[in-house]
Amino acid sequence: MKVKLASKHGFCFGVEDAIELAEKTAREAKPGRAVALGPVIHNRQVVEKLEQAGLEQSAELEKLEPGTTVLIRSHGARPETLAAAKQRGLKIVDATCVLVKRAQAVVQQLHDEGYRVVMIGDRNHPEVRGVIGYAPDVIVVDSEAELDEALPRRGKLGIVAQTTHTPEHVGRIVGAIVARPFREVKVVNTLCLEVIRRQEAAVALSKEVDVMFVLGGMHSANTQELARLCIAEGVPTYHLEAWDQFRPEMVKDRTTAGVTAGASTPEWIITEFVRGLEAFEPAGT
Image (tube, rainbow, N blue to C red; front, side, top):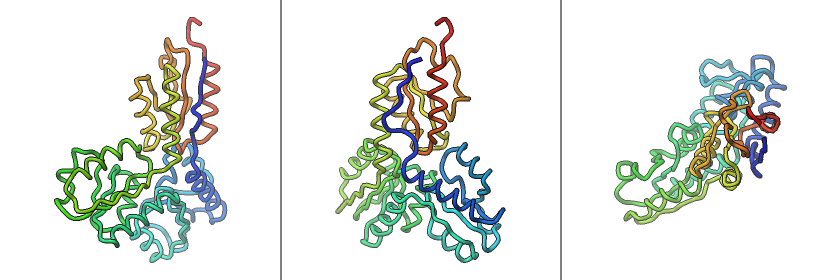
């Protein structure tokens, strides 16, 4: 089968840095003394490899013994979580993506400047949960329908966005906000350029193929967004974690497949999938 790979796909620099730090932490810590506060990245296969290397997972600081090394995952953490870890005598290794760190700092700065902070994002996403901890009473919205109930009636707003969102989605919500009678609206662009490049490459590729495969963790927000964008282009799209989830019926009557991958998807998974797809011969051919 003919297979085309998106020009931009797979690991971003933030994920590469987080995994490198996680591997180093697992190597250097004593057995049972290295713990990540939740999955380092949203990729099951990578997390399993890190666990095998000695990096355990926990979301409960109070159960960790003093002296344990705690890895803050790429999505970051709330400041009170970091303070609690230090208070318990835990050793902190911070693998927060630099762009998430910037979003955290921007939220704090906007609050200090007197803005009511609004974050456009999924309130259940770990990045968003961490970022909004850097200012009190941050408003989280992710659709225009939420604005009437969520926003105050007056004052000045400072707006940031979840790093993995699309510019188009954020732009629509920002446009709806600035159309309201606020005295001042300040928008700081916190979107990840690497994620945007992967989104653009996926959309471009989906126009050239008759089926798309998006590889990445099922809980990965940027991978889910890639799948949504491809579906919006009208091409049959499958979000899979790895080759073992492929089924022949997915490519029935298809001749050219496109493959892309989220920013948390390792290259070996992508390579295995592409090779498997290239070697696949639909029944009757």
